Image (cartoon, rainbow, N blue to C red):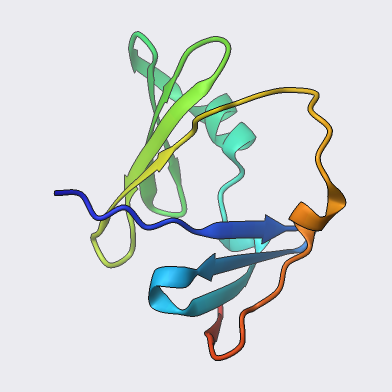
Length: 114
């Protein structure tokens, strides 16, 4: 059985905040340490229809995408965990409430700075 962990990821022009409820942890890092999905796609090489591979900071990413949408991104993290990011319910040009973008670290969470 897969262990599905959901994360909340917030970013601005310089920083990224990742809230991991299952670990009761918040990770604060810079954008230099986080791959830009658009850049990954631009640099990816198609290895078979709708399947692309690219590398960022010694990590190899496999991207499954059609012309219209990214379906998923998979890779192994620094601890050799298999990571799968699924993209679902995608919409474009949608109005979003600004409160969705206000990041708060829950009380009692460990804060990791990278």
